[in-house]
Amino acid sequence: MEAHGGLAQWYTNGPLSFRFNYQPRDGKTARDSYQTVDTWSNRAVNTSTADSTAHFGWTGEQAWVKAKDSTAFEYDTKFWALTPLYFLGQPFVLNGEGVNLELLPEVTYKEQKQDVVKVTFDAGTGDAPDDYYILYFGKESHKLAAIRYIVSYPEYFKEGGHSPEKFMEVIGENTVNGILFPTSYKTHWLTKDEKPGEYITQIDVSNVTFENDLPKDFFDVPKVAKILNE
Image (cartoon, rainbow, N blue to C red; front, side, top):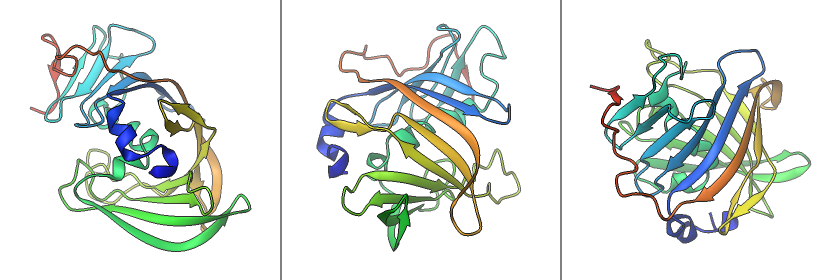
């Protein structure tokens, strides 16, 4: 966390805003939105890049969506309300209850030695506590170089289980208010020898800012929004 700007700076900066443009290479559903997140409470508001009147979000207790067109978001908005933060906010999002860290043997990635940390979650932590991450940090720089992960969200895997493990390259550097962010990610299927295999998703990150002057009700459910988890 210190190598990425420090936890104190992360929380001092205020809510984080960014564009997260997720583009599968096989033509499946793209997900492209502007997101603003309260880094203290994980409350979030997403806005469609195609329609500025279409929004979805998470209050900490309720998921909601507000859109004139039912096809504005052709994906699970409850799941996606915070998913981008759990990539862009690494490693700061690991500072929470129910998070377990395990140091694994070091590896070499792109000709650089990497410290490897496995992240797991206690039962009942979030909507997908069976998820895990395996993070590669440069042994000398301590900067995040890659993220291995699975998806176990119960709405996607109603009978249990999870997706095959993926390997996400962390690309580029962009420092905003003292915090280091990547500019993009390239996601691959993980091979049997734990290397990046088939390239499956391109993610671009832009418009990264911290917001200190949001209205007090910014993260509240809009009056005409549909509540998703009631």
